[in-house]
Image 1 (cartoon, rainbow, N blue to C red):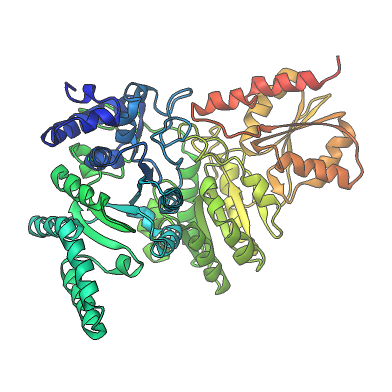
Image 2 (cartoon, rainbow, N blue to C red; image 1 turned 180 degrees about the vertical axis):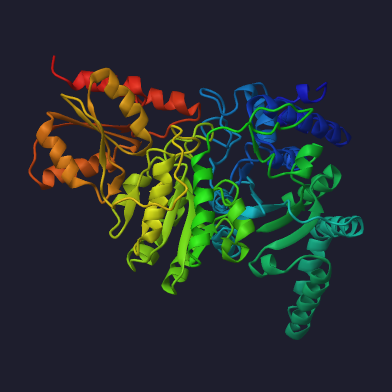
Length: 614
């Protein structure tokens, strides 16, 4: 079935093939991808769209000597397969298996670790400049998707690269625009022409000849720009200092290889515009690339089965609340940095299109945009993953918190996220949020509490954050009314003796499990900031041991807030802090990952027993 693919274990094997064999290899690679991802889950649509591009890049460039830097990295499965990890794909995103993203420690072919968007051009530029300083023939290539071009960092890098005169190639993988057959053929021809040696030599030669006649030289340059502008997209990239080539058909291997071969011998910054189709070669994914973007295990013949109804996820709880609150208050506006589906905003976008804003992969802009809305009387709700909020920390402090604006953050994926691993884990938000003045930080323990906290946060006239985990909670049916909670107040959920467990957010359920084993008291703290200091001091007076439990790094987190409270009031009591370790945790099953950190019921109970006197 994979007669050609089975002969390619590393790119050197690929480069031994004849060019006419490459389409067969691409077809086998695409079928292998569908079969493999159907068994493991993972990103499918984006990877099917970059098969030919991946084959062409490794065929033309001398990897790993030449550096390929993939943006985001969720389109690198074909790259992994061609670089010695074909068999390892059966362990994709599993504990002990290979990552779903490029990872420097995993392979010398992974030139740069990624997981967040819009970083590839900056990293590849650094590599290109390093090669220039070393007087090396090493080439650096950044492969960036069109979505990632909405991130400001990409344009910062382009602006800088245009004046560096380093041998950098930026490949724009444009998978949203299509090329009609006549225009596609013309553009492919032009790309070959503009990247070829004849055109470059003619351009350099004419510049030398015309240098003595400045008005004529200027006229020639303007004529060239206008001619190219009539048959190619905007000259924006050339204005930034790049030689723009394309757009070309990203599924035509002959055009790709020819164009890349030509570009490889050009000096200075080059920009290649490649058009691909998400889900290419798998009709179900072609029809619905969003549905097949990130998939679980599925039947490749029949596709993804409809999900059986079950407990609503926290994301769904937020989406339902958002629609209900928008009906109640016309000032509510919803903002997402390109995560409409992932953040549960699809229904809101349909019901309130005039109040829904997808700003693209631009987290910094999202927060300052929200600040501007808040300045003029709106009530912005920014739906954002914990890991992506990290990218807008300066804006959160300077544009929102210092001005004490009522911007509400609905923070999804707080804590561990499982298969996506360290790049997507929300391990740090409690620490980096609680140190900001004017912030209110809430951590719901169940679905009903999540809805109530969202309402509480929305009614504040100051910055606020509600931080909830990925997936489902313990299964508490939320009250459909828009009820709020008293700010800064926790509650006792279980009475016991000897030890008091102060649980934050998702850690309430395992803390209650541990408490049943130990006959301990459990407090559902609810608020990280303001902390319920009265409750903390009460428990410190009544129990010889206080245990804090959080799904956040221990450094500076909720446990630290408790310790600071006790120190501030001069109270001395034995403390045990449980949380995520000072490490980047690899991908795996979320429940097993929590257990390995000692954050399941058994682990919490075991840690407390070790602390208790004999």
